Length: 215
View 1 (tube, rainbow, N blue to C red):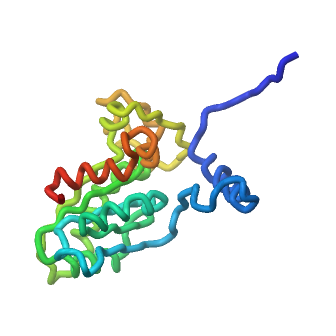
View 2: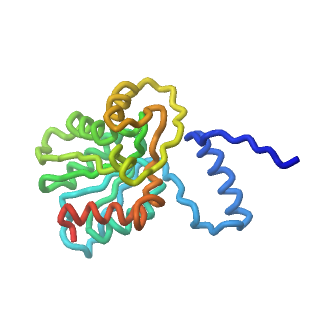
């Protein structure tokens, strides 16, 4: 008799197990130490080097830090800041933002397309308006550039089963995906751009920054 295998669809909680086995594989030197991108807990701000031209009025904010090693060189090349946050930003992160802004600024947001993270840009805009120092009057525009439902369809990115029982954003997420005929029980991972976008996630960001006039 042949071997019988029972499989099930991948869901987001499998990521924790995958990380465990990947770390084991690195320890045993089955894979290179830099082969796996890992999350960086907490908040981090990567500013362009002083040798670059004067700071641009565009920043990239990311709430999934594993992709940051791929995105930082792109931000560095264009002379813009890369900011990593875990969930909603702290008061300190928003204060630092307002202190950096000396001209109307656009924040380009990257996050998973999931019930929890799909509204990262919206929530960030709300937090900035609520928490910015009273003396700060610079206009700050926040825009989501990925992962978007239309990108899921255009690039044919497979969505995976989400295992979230949270009620936060549940109805908003359903409405958001309805016109795209996407299942709100699933999620799209930002990391998938590395596979499904020509040139990977760095090329994806570079193209958008060029469109914003950063050449």
